[in-house]
Length: 212
Image (tube, rainbow, N blue to C red; front, top):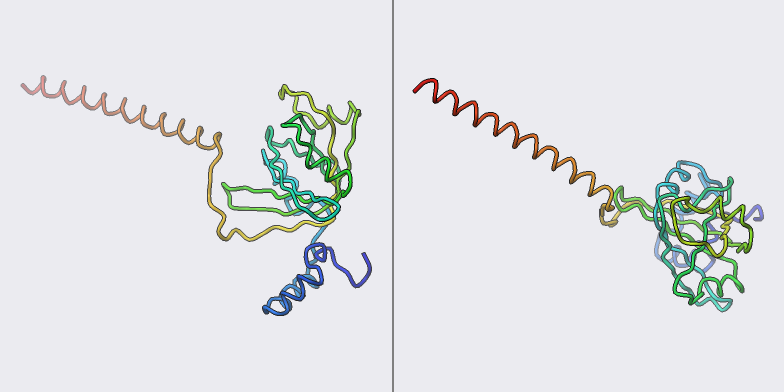
């Protein structure tokens, strides 16, 4: 970056800034950038946020700019923080369309979109991707030991900038584990109340016999 550029310029291109200017939001974003530009480091709770995710969206584009978005899912924490500005994950066999891989072969620019529906949070990460084939040590580092599938390659993502969005309009959704824990707590509470009710009914019946 030059002294006159900012990391947020990855998103706020001249065309975007022109639209912001025309629609009245440019001054606010310019002040935001002057106070605190976007970071390219994993900080501010980003590592914990990433490690708690079990899915994300990966955006790539062709050399001509045709975009493509792919959903990536796996065990919680499968997207790993490998360094101050580096993420990584193991790439497993899918439907063998290889659209993301083909895009990355000619355009290494990529984008990760992370959602936490339960807590209504989202994070956007801009960067570049490097594909690593045949590095068994790296693949072992990136693969969850209890995940049975065999990875094909490692994907390394170098962070160029990241930003956290506001939570407006994010629908609150709960994962299967969260719902299961809540249901277990409810089931246990119902069982406790049923037992207490049975004990009260038995005590009441005994009292009636005594007073008869």
